Length: 294
Ligand code: PEP
Ligand code: MG
Image (cartoon, rainbow, N blue to C red; front, top):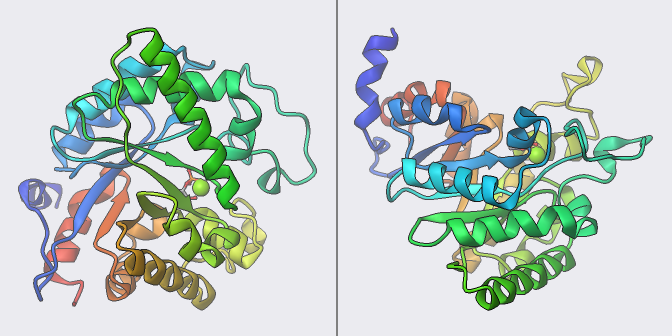
């Protein structure tokens, strides 16, 4: 079966009625680059940088991060590579980054919230990203956005990093910056947020958990935590409409992006870019090309 699927690696999928669809990879380590390339990933839609820190069991230095992000961007030629800034907290911890015990970690100090309070952690990452963007198709993505001020404060930090790098005569660029849509607030504010950023990517794992108020890790509420819930589809449709009205690209990078019945629905909303684990890429390239309808 895998041999038959392998022929899809070089294919850039087009649906039967002619819509080109980008199939990109979700990665959390440079070790996964080869598998993604073998499957013909059209870039990286989500690089979970916090997993890099977990793998090394400590925060990486600016230079180590620069080398890693540069290596990932280099591996995918001209395809876009989206690096998500640290999404620590919730279910993800990193040795060396202390988070005080919380009653509700998924509603707590996680993602952009933690990073904005910890510039000692956030600025080295932003500096590494600005440096790695030189001559590469690299983009920055911010997790867990729930209000515009988080984007404004991040932009101020990016500007600060650019001034520092310029003063130190270190080569850097200004990468496109987008946000994850994974909180109900970001869906409700999608029209306003679309004016502030270069792209959206819908994180259906967290979006489902927060829309349905059902812990994504708790098996007792697994029946509710399904992205095919009509409430989740409605949120995705609203987000697509806001992105399209503003003319910014939108993709889906949660697990739902590799589920055939959900993909058919996403395509009907106008989604033309999906990002998934490397092991799903060949199968989904085939599905989109031959079966997805549309
Ligand atoms: C998501 O929430 O859908 C997502 C892609 O991010 P993560 O699974 O890393 O929270
Ligand atoms: Mg998430």
